[in-house]
Length: 216
Image (cartoon, rainbow, N blue to C red; front, side):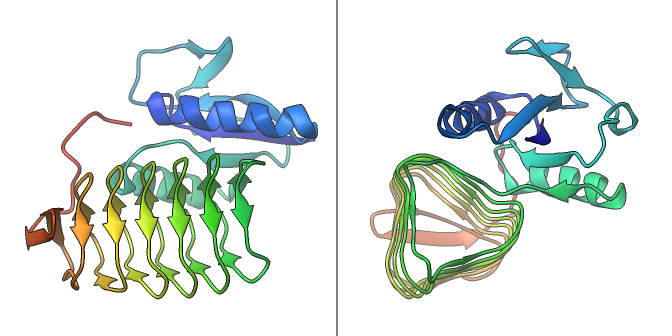
């Protein structure tokens, strides 16, 4: 079994914990050591320790899984743990269907009932909540977060550090880096870097790329 710590101890970390439990119910793959979150008062979550210092995570060959809900928060933890030499585990829920022709780089978390079609290319540190469909020949950059029930058309292109809200529909367009796509939005034209887009069809305007809710 692989020793693993979930980065984050908020709502999204709970979902990643749930996914790991489903994986272990089929095959005992992971030994979950606990959670890491230096921005919470929690000492335990699901009867597991919440670590506050990276130095306290001492298990040999331990891997980490991303359990935070925004690209900005992920980027902070990625940087901290990369500097300490940790490896990032890819977690895929057993109900999701991934084409053998898709390429998914390290550190992804893909939750339940997702479909990733042929010739999709996905960068490092990808987060995909449940019931997401990604069409053929789509390209997705690094540190992208896709929320539940998003539908992405074949041939779409999504840049780094982009956040896509619940039930958004992305047609065959290019979305730039550091973008925020509002929930239930229809994206039918290209979105430039550092933009927020929302509506049906969506309109875009400049954004600082930050998600202004919660912490992790």
